[in-house]
Amino acid sequence: MVRERIALACREAGRDPAGVTLVGVTKGHPREAVLAAIAAGLTEAGENYAREAAEKYAGLPGLRKHFVGHVQTNKARLIVETFDMVQSIDRLDAGRALAKASRALGRTVKALVQVNVSPVERFGVAPRDAAELAARLREEEGLEIEGVMAIGPLGCDSETTRRAFATAREAFERVGGSTLSLGMSADLEEAIVCGSTMVRIGTAIFGKRI
Ligand SMILES: *Cc1c(COP(=O)(O)O)cnc(C)c1O
Image 1 (cartoon, rainbow, N blue to C red):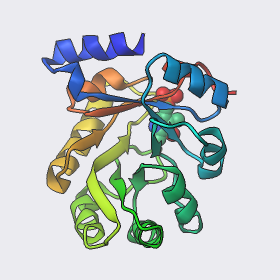
Image 2: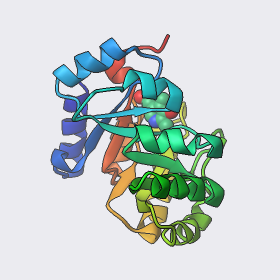
Image 3: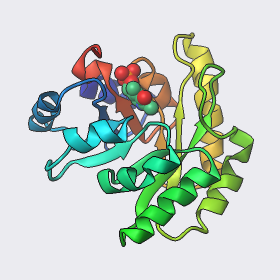
């Protein structure tokens, strides 16, 4: 169902569906739901809370894990231990804490800069400051900045969503990298039109959160 929506949106945008990675966002759903999704072919999963994910994802080999929640510096080590990619770095001290934790664990963590393109979203760097933040973060050993993530202005019309996603895409072009993470259950079509290379889907895969 979600794969079909992605395929259709790609066809309308003249894009190859292979260029859009599907991340299943599992927050609010139990480990059994993640196992069922893996059995159905899911290879990438995301969570907003590090502690919830650490238990839920324990011992699931082959799953690429994405942290999509707000980065608290005191959780940096748990985040690095639990996830392959952190999509939500929106300030220097959060990035530095993650870099320090990765170095201590002898690894590197892939990361995206979260850009704020929505008046109702609390987190994210202002689009005009994204490239500067990315440049500073790229000086940190232990972090690999691969692009941009943004949350759309949920609950508004398609045109407003597209404008917000276009702003995120402009920030991505200045930041550089391979990954533009845009699009959730309600706005994946607009995201794909605007060049998203990664959609983060919860409800449309797992149903309503409890
Ligand atoms: C919850 C969440 C999602 C998934 O949202 P749905 O609307 O359920 O698809 C995607 N990205 C982030 C950052 C989230 O917090």
